[in-house]
Image (tube, rainbow, N blue to C red; front, side):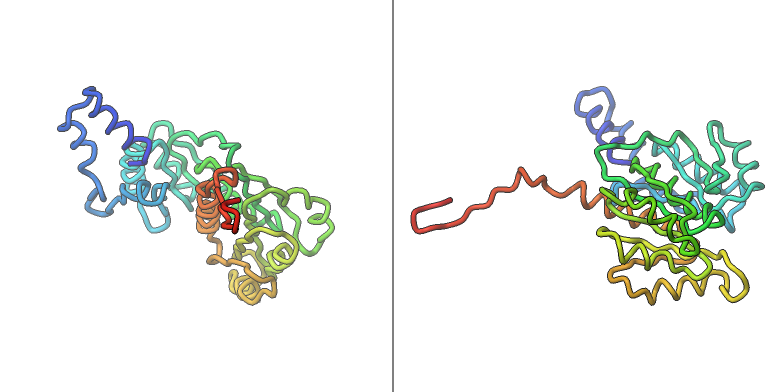
Length: 270
């Protein structure tokens, strides 16, 4: 249940188009819906402005499909992250209209909305091509929230001139998500250059001494770039949700023109 659907239900009751009994039937799943093996937090979109997302690892295709089906009934869109090809094939056979975005490994149930160009964009940057699945996970989640995305891929520190040739990308963005494996140095570089928030995502990309992303994580946590935010290894979804909160906070600020300042002087008010 999201805010738009709740408003539509209440408006229909107020106009007499919908009985209170029918409205109750649609709302009775709040604050969560019990499926036996899962409890769907159908109230989250009302609390936070966005619904929960299905994490596929550890779930059977049947469980994923059942959860997605119920979520789609309450929302316009349902996302299932970290789905492998086998899970996706089974889920798509059970859910009409579902698609599998192989680049991000996300099952999309419904249609991704068009970006809201009135919102400030978010930059998604990857150090290398091998980091693309995590970067695309972040990009798809941002798109699901109608946030415009500016992609800048394969600009790692091994060829830093590739980054400097694209500095215009960072202008007028609300936040920058930087995805990097190996030594994980790129977020520190960008964090020392750009003005806005930088969200660092370490990936498990790298050779043996990278310890499946732990080396990149520690580099980012120890960054000398002040104010760098770091999420967990391979957590493109978490980085995107942090950016969604940043954009949401910016969009809810009162416009400068609406602020009225009054100064007391000896001659009255100025």
